Image (tube, chains in turn green, yellow, orange):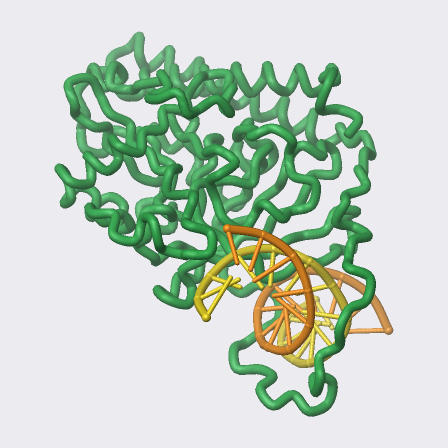
Length: 352
DNA sequence: AACATTTGACCAAT
DNA sequence: ATTGGTCAAATGTT
């Protein structure tokens, strides 16, 4: 609570600037990589790569040691509606205890994301919360809303950052296998896999598509969320969608009623980057497999990847302790996004 | 009524 | 024994 709100701390301001710079460098990086090869381009690319490395290092330093010990006492910490019922016959006579394996997380960690919003454009359902030993903040456990109906096993763990209470660290596990549009990931400009035109960079739209992005103040203005464009794209390029995403069905059948209780608000969080002239930029996760769908952090997709939808997007997060007062946005991640993570090779795979 | 969240209990891994 | 992840009944919300 010390930092956010009225006055930003110097560290926060610096971080924001770093994020800004990082994002801009990422854009430049992509432009270079997608430009026609040449000595100048290569050289510039190396310079940009170096800048990225330095930025990464800077983030590591700042975030690795910058623990102000804030420890904001979450409202969730000591909550609890007074009396708590006991499970009737739980203790000894559990008639149905155990049918699926438990224990430590088995599925591999897909990625770690740090964001100022819990929204990532997907539908999650909270199934647990626990106080973690080495952390003052509780960890919340989410699974994909479509586990029951589609068997989607994607999960994520969310924990409020100790060093910066306005940020949340989200660990993604497994992969989305559901087809609900709401679980479609945020998008990135695909790296030149399909030999995009040299002027591909011109296709990137950084302008907000509609006025509904009031919550986004991302430095690079990468919030080009366009739900209608997404639909359009899906309708007109179903094959492409199925090819690249596997997760987007052209018609949004259950869009309004997927999970009735909370009408899949995240449906508004799907985006498609369109290029000038109506050609949409090929989008996909950085992974070659659908695994990408596990998350859609901007930091992994520095070019146009964005995930912050509005606060009305994303189920299962409104109850997280001490949610950000503002819609927030993905501000770039910190530890996991610059290549010192398990997903190293997933990051910025624009080149080579 | 249906669905989502809360939260204590259960249980496997360490 | 401790810790972290999950289950599932109770409760809240729409």
